[in-house]
Length: 94
Image 1: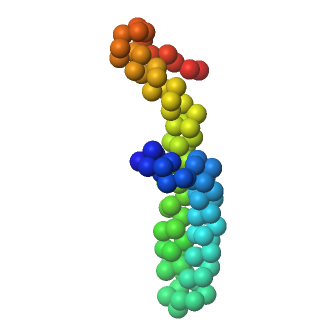
Image 2: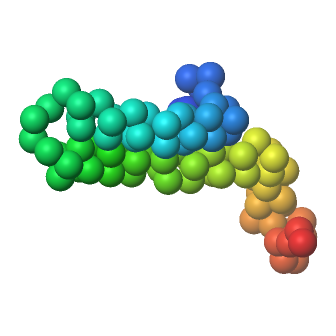
């Protein structure tokens, strides 16, 4: 999925921006629902929570994409060298 998002031209920074944007959109959806609909506070809260749940998904995708951007090619090379028997154990960073 991460590769597909990268092929579409999205980056980790775009995912982070979408996460922060969804937080702002959550507040806007809550306020708009409160003013426009006559359903009351409960309905406005549901709209705000619904949109607010998008943020963690975007942040998680941003983290996955950042790891792929930083370690993707290097990690795949080390993995294939391990499988080919060129190194005895995978290299660990950190």
